[in-house]
Structure formats: C-alpha cells, structure tokens
Length: 90
Image (cartoon, rainbow, N blue to C red; front, side, top):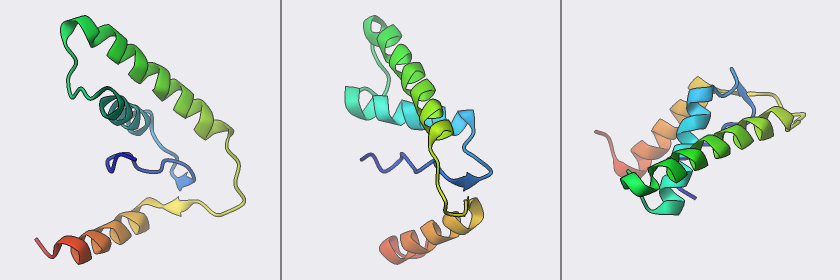
C-alpha cells in the first residue's frame, strides 16, 4: 500500500472530506502512475479520484466497530516516535 495513505476509520473526530479526498488522490496516483495526468487523461483521472472518494466515504460511514475511537494526537505521536526510531532525530 502507498505509505501516504493512512487509515481513516475509527478516529475521533472522524475523517474529514479533505482527508478522504487526499487518500483517494494518492490511490489514483499510485495505480495510474501519474503524479499529474496529461490533458487527454485529466478527466478520467479526476473522475476516478471523485468516485473513489465517494466510495471511501460511504465505506467509512457504514463500518461498525466495538473498539473505542483512536485519538489523532496519540496516533501522531506514535508515528513521530516510529519515524524518529527509523530515521533518527531531525
């Protein structure tokens, strides 16, 4: 999976439309191989991003869990510690 696509389910507060769109954009970039599509492929690229974002939002809204929602700050701190361990302090 693309490293830039982060889990979006079961967070408090829930994922925003911007976060969902960013994940969809990263997915389409990865699958298509385009960072920025050519003019001829631009409409197909943007349609794919919008369709995936809509389906992702529908998926997130329909998923159910009994676990408590994750805290964004706690998860960000864990990621920072992992990155620090992996890459060293900046």
